Length: 192
Image (tube, rainbow, N blue to C red):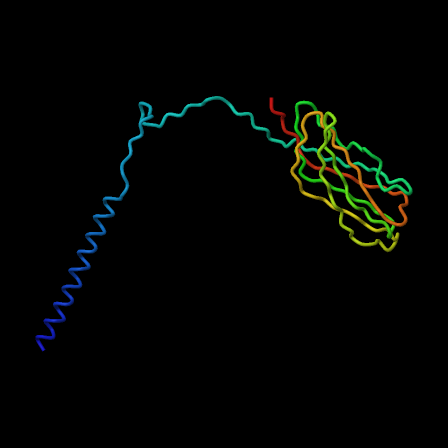
């Protein structure tokens, strides 16, 4: 029995010795990788870190929002709305950032609104953003087909740019009706 006891004590002593050795090794490594004292070089006589103001920054507290809605019309038998219908002209010194464009129209149930072309025009050149409306169904009280769509976009129009719109439709009736165009965005200062 004493041999067994000695063997158990020896195994326990070895395990304890190994654990103590491993713990001291881990502590040494942690001390070597621990925090290093850093001394700040840019301090004043009181030991506070020096701060240097280089000027002031102008902060604009309100967004210069632009939200415009205009109505155009389709003449009897016409496939195109009155064009060009100017929705907005960007003021000098500003850039218009367009965030959303909308088109909507109620038409004869046998007609279909194809798309709206928002044209950004400056000095004879233009860039087009198209919005394809969704047929939302027929309003039973008037038998009018309802078409609408708002697209989120990012488009830029520089100083003096005109935002024009025209809509295109097709169908069997093509009776006279109105079409709504809208844009939402904001103005920023033009680069100097």
